[in-house]
Image (cartoon, rainbow, N blue to C red; front, top):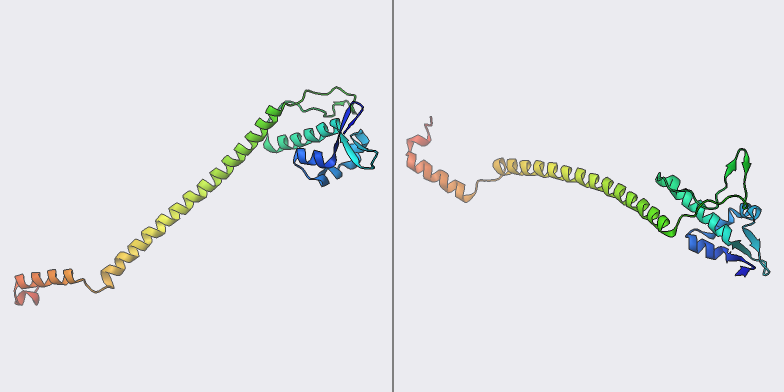
Length: 177
């Protein structure tokens, strides 16, 4: 809805566009009203001005910037401080970040997150592979010992021993050495 030259949005529209909950907007209701960004319409419903939309968008971008440790150009509709005095809407507004810059910032954030997850899981996978190889070697060693001492000799082994004994003669079986 448009009022004069100010474009107005419902709280639900803004929440969907910014991918936040309506509750997150209502938590900032007093601040938005004080700044003139949240106004009741003729139907007694709350609407957000286009400057209010930009303000909420900039707050979200700032939050992402703080949590991704990226240095990005200043954001629009931020209050500038001149000494101890806060400036309001009439103050100098800094340049807007373009949609491409926002998209690149979000893409870079998720690339970093993906790299962190990949690194963590590849390290865990390597550790698990090393443990598997260790236990496999232990099992093979135990299997070898088991086969050597606990299983009866196979038919082929028995036949080989009997052929050797026949070659050595009757008394050589009793007197080895």
